[in-house]
Image (spheres, helix red, strand yellow):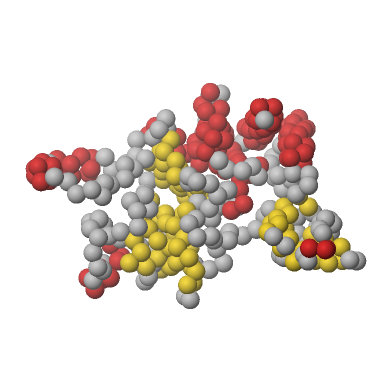
Length: 322
């Protein structure tokens, strides 16, 4: 938060500084024993045979921190988890990435190396579970091309790199939206990373790798095999549905505005260094609507200061409830 650079006047500087100081005092009270800075001493019990891990060193007989972060302890291992670091994949992470090479689909995921998505690790467009053939390999470019944005899940590390999988209808190619990039440490791992904001008509995907997708809501396809009567009805209505799809090529204006508002709310949180959660994002969008703030004005200094002040109020109320 201390690295924010906004064109602020003197009044806005005082308000923002007051809000950041208040947030720092709230966080320091809850994490006073866990947070350390460089050269801070870490209390350990040498009788238990301590193992010094990443972010620690020994100086004058004491274990000290070499990076700023949170002290973590796993049995005898003591290490410091840096607050600001590059994305480190873990199995099961939901990520958003961009296709950078069509062969074997190499995916850019904001990691030190590109990830790999194999044809056998995803559902085919027809949704039928079958063996992949040589014809499927020839038609790979009809599924994903360079610069396509996709959603997938981390499968694990193998000899040739990090592998992804997309064997679910919720994964795959993302269309009609915006791809945002925030520092990965602002997106915490949670049970749910897919969010359907019904009031706005949009989908929000918080990738653990710092890539966030905001786009028009898409109804996932059903994997269940339909009855023959339903199939006949669908065949008779193929021409009608295809014409309707051709007519509705663009996203409605209202949904596009909500996409832009949500994207700007995420940019504000990234600028201020606040954790990105769906609850906070919706609060910022509702705040901009209630105050009749234009979409482009959400990135202004006054609105950023107002968001910081609202965050102080929210955390203060949360602390009182505890």
